[in-house]
Length: 117
Image 1 (tube, one colour):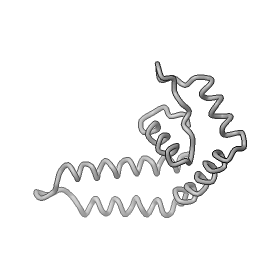
Image 2 (cartoon, rainbow, N blue to C red; image 1 turned 180 degrees about the vertical axis):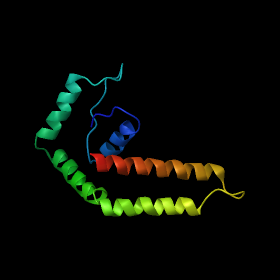
Image 3 (tube, rainbow, N blue to C red; image 1 turned 120 degrees about the horizontal axis):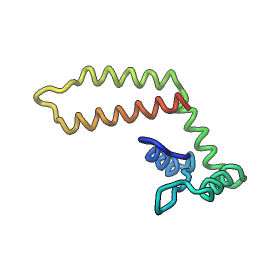
Image 4 (tube, rainbow, N blue to C red; image 1 turned 30 degrees about the horizontal axis):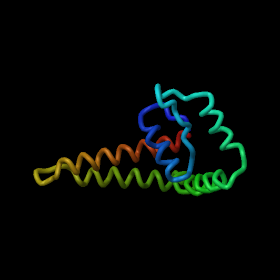
């Protein structure tokens, strides 16, 4: 994965940590992708190895879960319903509500990005 914008760096790291993809390493000094880091990442993906097989199998399983658009759409609808029914009032913990909203936004971005790619 070549993360460029917004949440892509975090997403790439999470996916690599969960062994469903690999992140192309950046240069330590300037943060740029080097030709060697890209080449090494491409080699990893192309060459057969036990580690690559594990990443590929994990990615396949994850795609079955997140690729279910019907389930994803229902989750988004349920989230919207939940947020509509849990609006802030005088007893609401504002910090927790803000954290919940931000989590929901992040989940929606991830789901949308999975639909796009």
